[in-house]
Length: 63
Image (cartoon, rainbow, N blue to C red; front, side, top):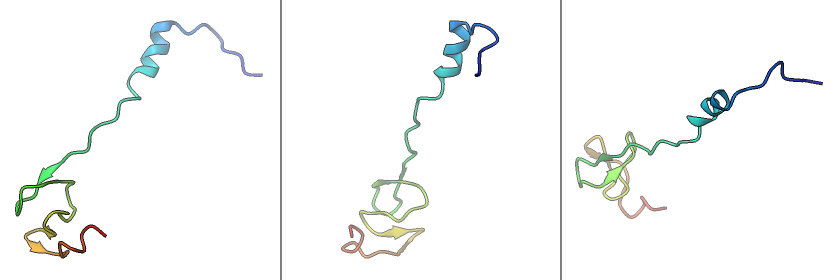
């Protein structure tokens, strides 16, 4: 059976637990065509443009 060799202090225990739980918010960029916010390297859901050209028709973007 596993038994700890010594007591772990509150400071050492809390240091280990402290920095792992936070999530980072996703970075958003503005679409150069319409100005809507979107995730980088993805086609815009509002206008369907990616890298200056239309890759998705606006009606099909929400499917």
